[in-house]
Image 1 (cartoon, rainbow, N blue to C red):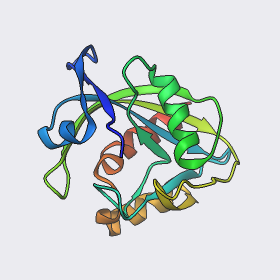
Image 2: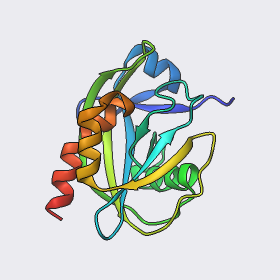
Image 3: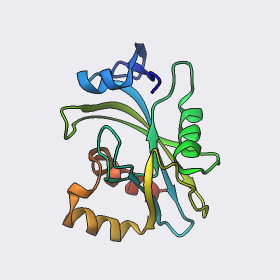
Length: 173
């Protein structure tokens, strides 16, 4: 497995250095991330279930895809690259907002991310990279909120944390 470097940032998203991805999550350091939400024209959201073997949150449902920009890579390019790598979908995405969170994960790791959130609208069906995700589905926001209320533990912490802001932002577009 190759070493993946991520971009460490300050609270204003200014780069402060780079570090190996797992070490960043072990130390809980603030780093740059991208998160993608794809919707159908009718408003259903494309979810993925993270592959069971992932080093954190395996088997949990989450947003369409996410990841980290490489050093020197723009967030736009990183979001579109991750969408293609994880879901097999190639399309232009729209940056919509930024958010910062610090969330403890199940195995002592921390997601302390300055996240760049991107939206897209499509009817494309994913061609999953099974190293990343093992299932997908389109779901209405109402149904998703019911599922989260009934079984929040089935969803990734960052998805639970950002979903309401995502839905509010989507409603104003």
